Amino acid sequence: MIFDFPQLLKSLQLKVTPQRLAILESMSTARTYLSPEEVQGQVQLRAACKVGLPTIYRNLEELSSQGVISKILHPNRQLYYYFCANRDHHHHFVCLVCRTVQDIHDCGCAALAGQIDGQVDVHIMQALGTCRRCCNQNA
Amino acid sequence: MIFDFPQLLKSLQLKVTPQRLAILESMSTARTYLSPEEVQGQVQLRAACKVGLPTIYRNLEELSSQGVISKILHPNRQLYYYFCANRDHHHHFVCLVCRTVQDIHDCGCAALAGQIDGQVDVHIMQALGTCRRCCNQNA
DNA sequence: CTATTAAATCGAAATCATTTCTATTTAGAA
DNA sequence: TTCTAAATAGAAATGATTTCGATTTAATAG
Image 1: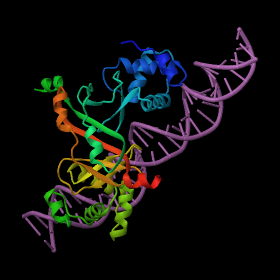
Image 2 (image 1 turned 90 degrees about the horizontal axis):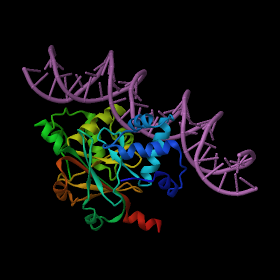
Image 3 (image 1 turned 180 degrees about the vertical axis):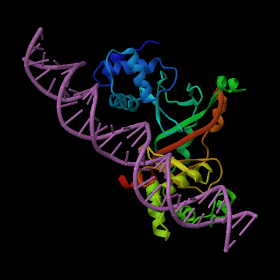
Image 4 (image 1 turned 135 degrees about the vertical axis):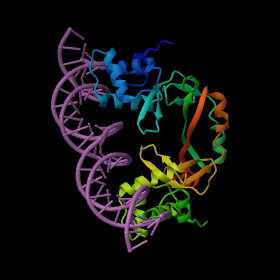
């Protein structure tokens, strides 16, 4: 899949800067979720320009709040980010060994509304564990 | 409901200290989720002894990992804790306005296993929003 | 193509929740 | 009562994340 990142940024009313493009490209080719520092590392590799950590943080947060990338809540409390081409509502299963991500399509959230006396604005749902490949390698 | 906290602590192989009892009592009477600092505040009120923040953190984490209290992942990234008498597997809806908590009994996690190519060790699920009372007050 | 300006970036410094460290105290077993 | 491992206190450190002010730059208009 090819993404037109300049176009994407414009549609989000964000300026098309080399830093942003490098971040998006790094995210979109990563096969695992990445910490902001790791994103910086990837960006350095592919961009001539240097990108400071605050810029990385700012953009990851911006892109995440716009729904372009997703946040992973790791048990170690650090934030990780993952670029997911799937634009529908869904959640993730993350392998804590190899960091790969699988989509969860049916999160059962439809059942939520009926159980709650109030209005649900967000729901966080995430499964953590070990993917089959990593399970087998340990055995 | 009355809890025998000394007994509970013994069953967890933890020493029965005044600090722990004060933390458990504060948590069990709170009607909302509390930050560690707030727990400290509550504890000061009811305990003669002073309790340092590191002690609060250590015990909240210990009790949480033993399943006695639950952790709330707030969007502001701070950790909050909540004492929940319900010992069964369940999740929480938290009102971001008044901080009250409602149990979610059916999280739909049964559907998870089938969708994932691997082994799910933990699943985090949490609904955030506004409870009915707070919805009405805004209107 | 140049001028303009709001947005974005940089690097250094600050923030602040959380954790670590060390000395001291204490609960609970012998 | 004595002993010992566990727990606590308080101070200090940690480290991910944010803020700040100065500088640069993308994008628009002339």
